Amino acid sequence: MIPLIFLASLFALPVDIFGAPTDVVPVSGQTIPLVRRNQSPRDVSEWAALAKSQRDNLLAKYGSSKAQKRSTGYNLIVDQEYDSSYYGSLAIGTPAVSFDVILDTGSSDLWVASSSCGTSCGTVATYNPSSSSTFQNLTTPFEITYGSGAAAGYVAQDTVQMAGFSVSSQGFAVVDEVSTDMLTSPVSGLLGLAWQSLASSGQMPLWQTLASSNSWDSALFAVQLTRYTNDSSAQVLEPGGVLNMGYTNSSLYTGSIDYIDIPGTPSYWYIPLTSVTAQGNSVSITSGTTAAIDTGTTNIAGPASSVEAIYAQISGSQPATGEWEGYYSYPCSTTVNVEFSFGGATWSMSPADFAFTQTSSTECIGAFFEATTGTGSPTWIIGDAFLKNVYSVFRYNPASIGFASLSSVAIAENGAGGAVPSATIGVVSAAVTNTSDAPRRHALSASLSTLLFLAFSAVLLL
Image (cartoon, rainbow, N blue to C red):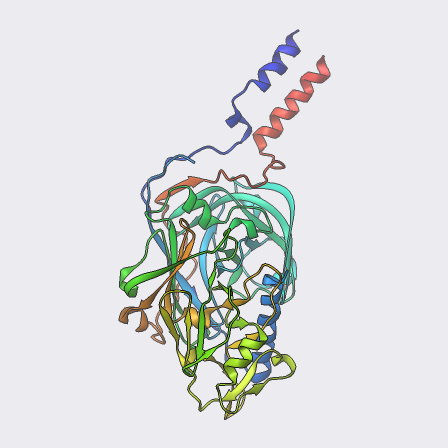
């Protein structure tokens, strides 16, 4: 009888004995900055390769709790390769280790390179699961494919910190295999900022964990991006703007924020696109057209007919060939003005952002390119070429995107140079435990493993 009593007592233990997450009472909040990174000047063939990679990547991407004490935070951004991408920093594990990650509102997974990644990860900083006391392997395979390559590994949970917020049991992917040259130091991974329904891992994104747990003063995040593409003295890395978490920074915009609701179930950050004009002339777009607002895409993609109509307004433009397929060239001497409306205000795009790169003394490649997205995906992808011109707000509830005009303070940061933010571990001032429904059934903590062993030992004694 004694073994039976012992076995019964094991299953009567409280659930938290088995390593289940528990609520953490947070303290007040804080912020961290984002940085943008640039590479050395490229020749035309390198820009062409980047353009092709971006187009392929986009087609792959879009083709087929208890109330907490609220707070706010910010993360400084770094500008990479003359506005080609923007990254911020976060920290993972106990003790915390900091990593630089691309900020991508067009996907939903957080992943970082593992210490077992090998040569394909180059010299980037890597995450070592064995060094973190709060790591849990969910033993679920992870794989995500981009036009420029793929990343694979497994899904795990650990404590993740960003902008002064700490989330325990946050799901993410530990990547031990990536395509060659997919990661360039100092970037070690990617932070998806779209909705959970898109996550290849099935895990709730970090931002959504914070927004849904009532951790922020306002359930939203906002982005301001800088411009260096037209700065001939720009360095490989430049200050890239800021990611505001839980609030909007009124010093970075003027007037009101024009919000547009997501017209359906949130997945991508997408909204109706109601009008596009080029050189003052209206471009025909299909009724019901939607556009994804994507910080992880450098340029702007649209249906072939609409992109063709834009360049038809530019004298001397023509379709590009080879690796430039889908893009158009046009005379660099032409000032191109494009405007968008998403059902509210009209937003202008700087001619400097329309020019993606220069291929000769007279010819430029435009930022708009042709792409056919998959069924159910937005037909337009609006990337950084437009987002550098506005203060962008991504709101949790009601699910919507807002734009506001940049203030003189924000505009003055373009091309200003200065110290480039580095990945640091900030002071945690607000904490929350991830309690989403994401798969965690395979996770085995040390305490659970020990108790299961004792249970089986008791059975053997019967």
